[in-house]
Length: 243
Length: 113
Image (cartoon, rainbow over all chains, first blue to last red):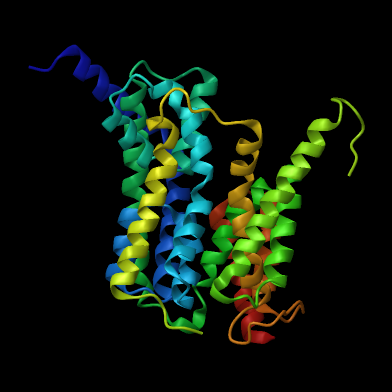
């Protein structure tokens, strides 16, 4: 016997699966590139598959990869992945009001499966006011389709990569994928100043051991971005822009 | 350059990265109601990924292997590829096109320069 509530939850789940459809080609490409880059960067196939299944964060995986290959200290690698993931803290703060009444295991599950794509899709519906009553089942549908697509494409990339000659330099697609991720966010002034400061300091500090130049760069960038934001806040609204 | 991370150490790295995904994504969903993001902290968190990725990408392009010295010349295939990808992004957000265009430019430069 199926209760009315279960019917409603299933319907919401299916709606969610359908709602994420337009994002799936992007998720597929992104997953495939991550998979190819993992193997071409030098990870063995089983490790690459395990990383894809457990970490499930393309940008953190691509950021960690050159450090793994270079034999950087473990804490440097994990810390780099962590900083790359920090944007999710903001996402989870934005999702909190919608899921605050759920039992914690459900909140934990919805949180872990949330990605850039699924979060963006969620906030679009939230802003349109078109979320169904069973928001949790809907978001579970969104996240499940995204997870399946991403994992399938990543594993396809991981296995397919071994058939591609190394001279093609396919590992460079990983760097380009990060360019595609960063590019569109370079519209706000703090992001531009922060990224520029991070790049310059990372180049200057490149000779430091343990890939610590990356950290110096990231830190300098965050400080520069925060200062730029504080400076912009001080300007009275409507005043002419000052660079 | 030291040996790549492998074996048990690689397992530890993967576990650590998985934990970092879980902790950041579930942070506020699992936290008590008292936890609030201050404006400063929110700004720092918002721009941290862009800055970290810039610190990764730019040296990766300009200090490419095997030499790992600054190469700002337009004979640098990675620079050409990244410029191609950047140009594409100026008029389209399509990631597939961006990667195809960037890889095309990179490959041409690699083969002919």
